[in-house]
Length: 387
Image (cartoon, rainbow, N blue to C red):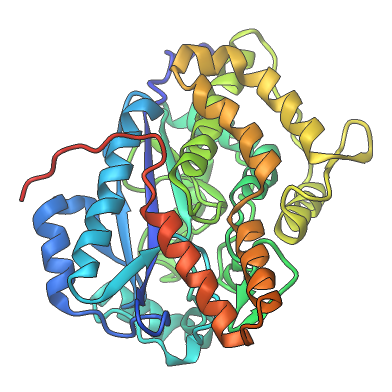
């Protein structure tokens, strides 16, 4: 079947943790005025999240990553400025270095109250943040077909985004401990493969009819057809602390989907591997990030991540040029060379200990690093906001 070319529009959702600038711990109950001021400035592009100590921003759908950049920069700036009025600050990290989940409260809203009652301790541990990337693909069946194929690349995307090495005051040894917390939730992990959108919707309808879920928004796979928009939504990634890293990872997802569509138009497709195999790479990305390689299943061997990244960049260069995001794709090499947020956090912690700080002070130094990196707008320019 020949499909009309998708728009490949792109939008980014980012979740931030709000911290007290004095203690550096999570702000257990930020004032309602903070959210009201953010809403006044950003409208429906800002929202509550499950925890009271979280806030979410959503960029509008854009034709290119270049158009996303100033929105993302301005939204981060706005949240930081408003939070600062209340002696708080946002951090774009997927876990907090030392605050304890047992001391946090969830947002008092119907959706979150239902989730809290349904999932109990599993969801109470969910002191984690993620980055979701939406790419516009209007045809339902094409959206499912590309979802089936892009699963192979999800561990590669996760590895580039890692920002959660700490959990409750301990270096976990993982680059993305968020995934360990998230995987305790139901309906997470890699998606099932479906032959059509009709087959996918039939499965969702069975769950809705049985009273298991209200709708498709409670299917939380690593990538899913959005239940609200005609998009494919990538959800596997940690939230990137630096804007340039976030935009690079989002651009790679967008370009990979275009590459898979382009192959399809030439009567080719990416080979689909079993979840058993892809999950091994998912674990390696969670554990090692970009440090220790992923499995190339065609070769049957672990290949250094840098080599894999160069192969992926070569695969999507035509698409990056067409979508106008070659600078963001080239920034992936900067991530590979300099490390992710997880690397910087661990390095700051170890340096602080070497300077004579105790463990608590060293973890507070990590939070200071996260505050600074989250506020840095990268090379983007700001958009004016309504006062």
